[in-house]
Image (tube, rainbow, N blue to C red; front, top):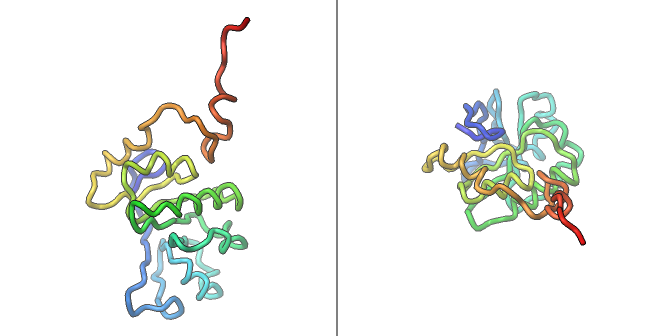
Length: 170
């Protein structure tokens, strides 16, 4: 199961993770809807170009700009959060949405918890693969923890002081 566009949905994508002995050049990308690591995409790009149901995921130490020429090829791009305290994925998502103009599904994978999800959606994530040891219905509630936002971000271009109607006067 995955949270997608603020609802719980079946997940028909497989996230390909490399094993200890796998190499980006040698790993076999199975048929079907697969989200492959960026390093596999780079190593096997010529072979994978013909795949229509292929997504890519970035590790927290990779750069969104590495997809500059290919960003529109993918219907899903995922960003891996290896641990709760690693916030580099927020910057990756922001760059994908605001600098590279990615408009497809942007999915958070890895150590994704309810406490992060509201902020993840602010920078452009619209899908979340919450940790499997957590209740996905509870995680979904994290997207509506707050009613108002003060700062501008990917989900709201204007800060609150520009959106608010001020009454009164002198």
